[in-house]
Image 1 (cartoon, rainbow, N blue to C red):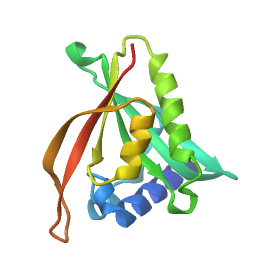
Image 2 (image 1 turned 30 degrees about the vertical axis):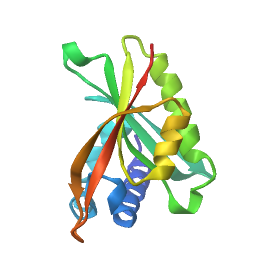
Image 3 (image 1 turned 45 degrees about the horizontal axis):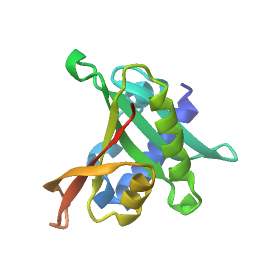
Length: 164
């Protein structure tokens, strides 16, 4: 992974966390201090990361979606989608849908995977609609999942998609 790729990914992530604190479990202040090199495994694959898909517009990174797989033997049939991001300048163009469809196809082709999960802020109707359109179903809700600096407490819907 090249340094410009890491820089572009971190810039997108930092912008998304700062602009949409309700949509992410990570907080902008902490993540802004995170070392650039800590994203290498996420982008190159390694550790629990299976892959990160990116969307480019004229060479500029405008979207990303990461998939992780459980490393422990008893739960290796589970994967998790994390960090779905689409730049504010590119929302509404189907980029998130394209990333999600590509991720699902790749997961279905991965031997040994049976399901993929994700969490989404319960008030994010657009994201929930996108996930439901691709077959994800809600299996639970975690109340008080995140607490924002402004005092708001938000729930996270837990969703899953069977792959087999």
